[in-house]
Amino acid sequence: MDDWLAFAQSLPEGTHKKYAHHCGPGEPRIVNHKRDGWGWSCFRCPEGSNRGWVPRPAESLTEKIARLQRVQAAEQAAQRDTSPPTPAEYEPNAWPLDARVWLYKAGISNVEIKQLGYYWNPRIARVVLPVLNEDGKCVYWQARTMDKTNPRKYLNPSVDKDSLVARFGLGASIVLTEDLLSAYRVSRAGVEGWSLLGTKLSTHVATEVLKAHKPVAVWLDPDKAGRTAAARIIKKLRAYGVPVFNVVSERDPKLLSKEDIWTLLTRCGLPALPLL
Image (tube, rainbow, N blue to C red; front, side):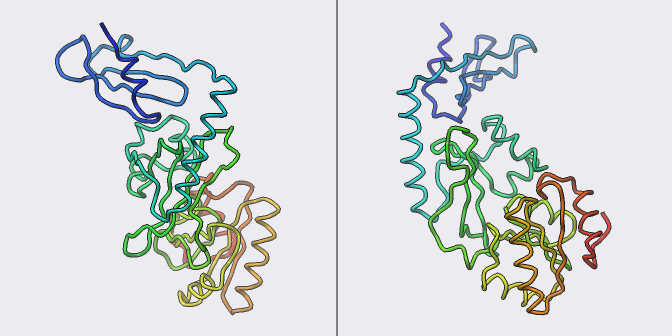
């Protein structure tokens, strides 16, 4: 009797494990527990007969409330700790599809996901983005939910962010962005991408910019809050004598191609930008 479903239902949500199959010895099947159901795929069976799927029954109101309460309790516990929340699933192919797609839309591949140390946490049902310092130590993290019923899109530890800046890449110029993914994406165009983790330029980060002695482009999200914050940051940096440029785009930097990022940075007047 094939009891893969009971085995799948016993797994924590967002995880998978190897499992036996009638096609032969060993454990050729991958059984998984996803948010919307349970499934399996066998890498030994011919295509067309190598997978199965059972959707999760629709939640009752009582079940939904209980689930949200469990998630909220886990989130509150995670917020009190500066260490990244566990458990951690580092293999993107084992994540729920929507979690992977969120990063794919930002142009980040599975290889890059692993290099950046991003992972899926099934306990809080979020993608966790660690922020590392120059020594490779995690000093901050953000966690993005894929659950549209969760009112908190991002979760992060309750710490003072004024002394934090997430840096990616090397280059003769610095580009300041709001979020981590945008900072990483612009860094692939031959600049240093610095995420402000918001829209505020703290005194500490301003000091770091001055110490770098490099021209700066400010590229915040293309909404009213981003435009207002960008004008404020540019005014502050110019008062310090920093060569500063404003980048205006119709979409967030993380949603643009490498070529479009390079083009927009070049057009804004940022000097010493290498050719793609």
